[in-house]
Image (cartoon, rainbow, N blue to C red; front, side):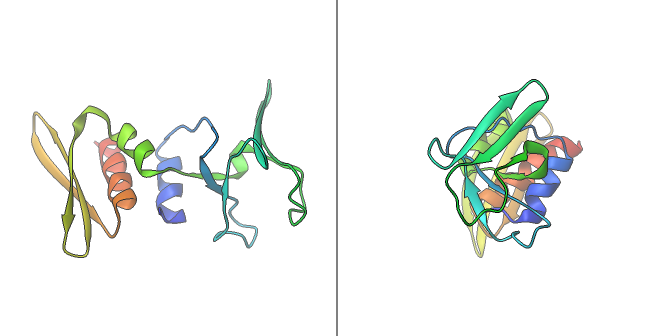
Length: 132
């Protein structure tokens, strides 16, 4: 799974998120950085208002708030979502010693983005594409 640091870098790079069931997120800076929540039609729902989206916690007695503005949470994209963000430049995913490499290709050649797990390697590929 992505680290909070990589997720924050994706957010800072302008990666947009439209919350949907199954999406993962964290609530940073509230002593809950290690708690991963999942958008679900049962317990964590997205409510869209003219002023913005709100993440609502339904029936979670351990949560002290009913809802948070979407901007207060950080999306932790899944591997399939990151692959989609890499887009047409995605060539392949390789297993390498100590992790995985996402290989992207364009008219300038191939680039390898290596990390401990596939999601992190995909995130690095997304970040590299946005830095060009």
